[in-house]
Image (cartoon, rainbow, N blue to C red; front, side, top):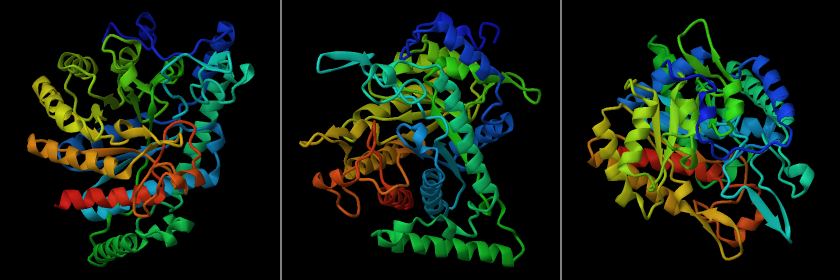
Length: 443
């Protein structure tokens, strides 16, 4: 790829980028960042790519989930552990129900930026830069907080490293051992309407593991789990600084995460984000919506996977329950015509966002579930397969999405609505969604 370099994106149109008042300070921070160790390894990236390729062929299922946007203040042991616990609990349900490998990818250790619909925000006649995530500026509506600060790039790298270090320590210390799922129980799970169903899953998987051990077959990959990271590769200077060459493999790797993704707002085939992502060896996710024409989609696929490499491209569609039947079939057919192998994933969250009468941005559980079920049906009817799901969720006891087993209503949103950006499924709703996936696939 002689026409690409980690900096070639700078000659393309770059959307959703912050404007730093001091370019020299930005370059100083980037220079320091380029000398810091990477956050993930090329071995891990290659392992994930192989597993995604297998999932696209029917041997595996991707579970991707986490916060809409992480904050630096979330770098706390209990918050990190709860995120890991709910993803492990969901994957436990899927492993037992689907009888196949589940690939666990968190929106974690780097999801510190968010795209904005406008560069500025005005309150009471005062206009300031929009809050673009903790990697860039702060949420407080003051000039000091909202001014993009390049020092946050280094702070973000440090927070991501601390988060990953704790996740790896938990995993290697037996926290993620499928023989001991009781380690993952959240204190408030005892009161969940789905607690009994979850216990049955735990007991069933435990019996399977004990049987395999008794007959001497071992439990293989079921004994322990791998955990990968992902985030939207929005801040291009940050991603470039962590894009490295390694001795073990050819090419360049974005070692800020195992699987970076491109958002719908920056998915221009000729844009800077696609330019940077097309040259890296990582698996790359792309968010797709109804605004993409067939020509646009074909150009994206060709640009990002010209060699038709298995495991390279993860297409994450997000339409909304009311649009998916009209939009997805044509999109599937368009990608099939390209001949590129892809892993199809459903994000049923973003297209189902609404605002309640009392001003809360929320999503309805039944609409999320409806879009997900329709996605399974559409892919099956097209002769293909939905190979994964992508959720915005948390392991905490929040009240941000309506519905679910407890029937959370609009009044109930007020109890624990804490997100600064998008509403997330709470621990009960997330677990219920995993069980719904199993029921759908079994049917």
